[in-house]
Image 1 (cartoon, rainbow over the protein chains, first blue to last red):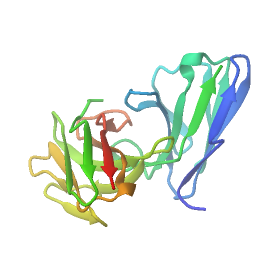
Image 2 (cartoon, chains in turn purple, red):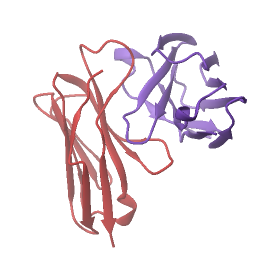
Image 3 (cartoon, rainbow over the protein chains, first blue to last red):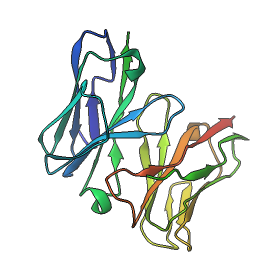
Length: 115
Length: 113
């Protein structure tokens, strides 16, 4: 399999549930990203990992918890979410980060609905 | 990050017509990217540009990195129904800190047979 894959593609959860989103990149990249895309809003960068180290956390609520066990895998652990967290969550990867990692490749996304 | 100025916001054209959209920034960019996003899917990278004046094609798509380094355009020749989607420009300037790409608001393209 090539590119960036994400599972699940769709997720419906209640506000008290705990779930995890998974991302895997098959491009040999060393940086991975989580973005949130809400309706009629620009893409919001949530987290960035470079060489498995978190290098950016853009004021994201603690109910979102990222994990990067190795350079190919990225998780987003979710707990006690709110309905306004419903959105398309996109994973991306690049070779390098910051000025060295301008070309980001996106996965297909997970459509999350919080009831 | 900065918001890029992408236009037009939407286009409604007939199959076979050519399409042109552009993106401008307030600062000099060192990378311009063009993505296409279908409903419920992630953005797919169409063309990446790294040098002022660079002109790159991908099938019926052609994109250019503006000479001023503050703009880029994307052309689609002889559009077909599968060109329908939202096209985003994105990029970075030398002065950008952090790791986020700057994105345009997107151009929504509708193509009628």
